[in-house]
Length: 567
Image (cartoon, rainbow, N blue to C red; front, side):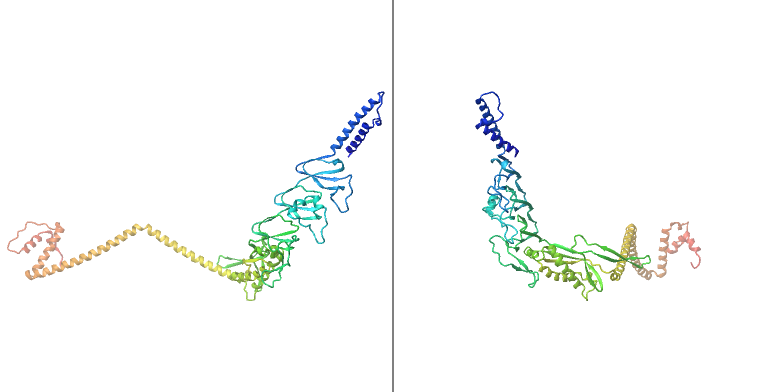
């Protein structure tokens, strides 16, 4: 500003020096008037050049390629009307026109205006820019966001002059957003807020609750949609896509650039969810042990079971037979995409369904079925599958009312009071001991069998020899039997021969002849008994007598003579 004033003074003085030479003070000396006038004009020209240079330096701007030039007029303009923020007709204040990249000459632009060089608006990928207009037509009563600009007028909307004059743009948050890209817009008119785009992951859908209706959208009366029983109290309004309310068409997985101030998304998982009810109670148990004398010793213990971080809630306490039995439960839940709007319309989201509908329902159903007067505490162990099936049939109906499908109900291990388990545990221990004893006996028998087989293997040679000896004895026995039979037959034949011989020779002669054969056989086996001296044998005797005489002279004969009587 000071430089501008100096430039003006220089211009005024320079003009005066050129056209009004005498008016220049301070020229003294004895030179003639012509010389003084020439010197004055030269000085005036210099002052004009300096003043013009000062004005030129204050009359241009250079805008970088990544910048936007913004101007605020300070002088030589009328005041803005009340309520106006942006000047469109040369008024003082923020100007609607902006300056693009390059050199811009505007007379005394740096004097009459304040300039700002702001960065180009860059919307990164995966984000969108929300626009808030500081000037424009006011919103209609009941309207909370400006009307959406048609796609063909999107570029015109970013022109501040068009926005404020021909386009009749509205002040406040804009329904139209800026998708990823670079934009040169008047930052005096539009405030920018960056938001992440709506990213619907796989296995999920996005249910949209719209706060605005599309222009020229013919929205009929709300659709009363209910899931499950016809008289469901959870029937809620569902509207067609583009109308105000919960849209009946969820958005499938993908990326969407929606103004989330106008279109509020709720992400609903369509994959199977597991809700568990576990922990949050004191577990009492009984332990059995054997004393040295074989008696059973029982000991009661207590343990706190915490609620896991992943659990939907604590275990369900069921009163049965006067006992409180904590029961763990697991529910598999899924939401079909077509029922996702119902979930949002009824309770809000899947977590609300869990907390407000399924959890209270599963507790009530399990307590009713499990606590029936005819129910026994041990049924939670012995008839667990039947209980789970009955609970599942009841809870499925409650889930359908909220738009969720109950796929499966499973009951976990209950915490049965140990007083009810003592008799069963003692019986189990006795059976296990019996089984152990039988197994040990079986093992001992197997060991004995193995030892026997090992001993047999070690005595295999003896057994083989004994077997061979046994077989040899059998052969010998058979041999002797056959020999005896042969001898018998021989003796029979001999007897028959002797009988025939006796008929011819007489029995005495046959006896003598047989005796002689026996003597000769003995003599053959024992030749020492025969010693034959010189014996005179007369020829008048018989042959047997001669032989007897010979033997009588031998040792055998002497032995026979000395043989005691009766021997």
